[in-house]
Image 1 (cartoon, rainbow, N blue to C red):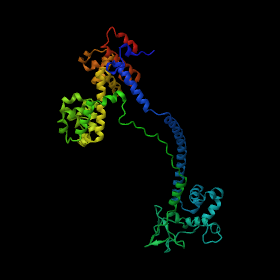
Image 2: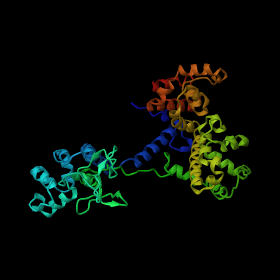
Image 3: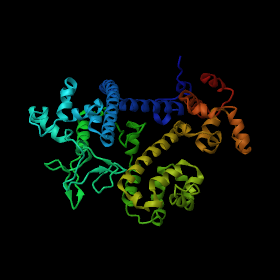
Image 4: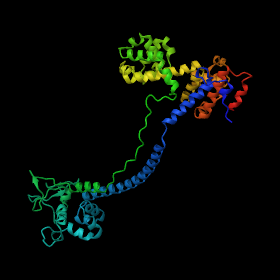
Length: 471
């Protein structure tokens, strides 16, 4: 059976007189309610199920499309290479794979599938013979025969009577350097312009280029048979509002509306926009204190030189002061202001001001809670920061983490007087940092132990039984 330790410790329902443990539990309840309010509604969950189902179907369909597109691309590569390397018309006419792309690209799919021999006869028709298949067929069939002109015979000549052939690179030439004579039936697929007499046309003695019929067929075949992959449906983007705060609620709103809190906020908002340099910022103690308080660094105001160097730090430089301290608060301050790149311009931006004010309100509220019940803020910070720790020595170097683990484990403060290695060894006998950081249950147990012993003033004989409550 769960035991409410706030009762054992005499906590009341009043925030001002509540024990640290009871206050912490109240805050956790508020955080849980806020999280639930921001979680998916039943409708959103149902939509997510439908979306996942549809996306699974889309992935299956896209796998099919990708396979089909790969086949199409292979066909086109074959078609292009075959047209470029064929040395006779017969090679192409008797190649069913080549003919398939040609037929499909020119809307002769049915003829290819049902009467491929007629397709061959159309393509090889003698266009000067009125009784040829192409001349006796439809206008569409005649246009196909003219387009490829596979029925032309003999060696291709130019309009001056010179033999057209292919050079060593397969390029049509008419200057007598041809290695291989070009059959007349292949002239058009080699991009030669042919006149009405069947001769290759010239300009200043050079062969004229004709239309790229192979390229056109490739484009048409690809457009008709390559599939466009379907887009998966994305979940609607859900962003928490910048004001989302885990402990947001009536108590927080009451605190942040206090006259003294609002006075500090208004002072900062009105004066930060007027600073022109870091000298102006550091010359205004109230302004600087507000800024540092927003990063939980108000105690550092007594070291203005150090803070200035941190603000000026170049975070890309591992030797910069902000990086050498290895304190995430310092690094976050330098990052948010970005003085190294932007000077004070970003600090003066309205968006930056709003962000800093939000930080100030939340930290000030948590400090207020800690005044009512000392230890609550350390418990909150422990939960937030322990997950970023990877070494035991980091726990010892962080005042908050050290406070929680030493009190929770009844480790004397005198431990701090020992060498660092000895402190690490002593702490590792009590806790495994990596196991702790990844186990929410263990984190909660650590926090509850800390708050219990913090409230009771330490583990004495009268409170030792409390240890057994947490195992």
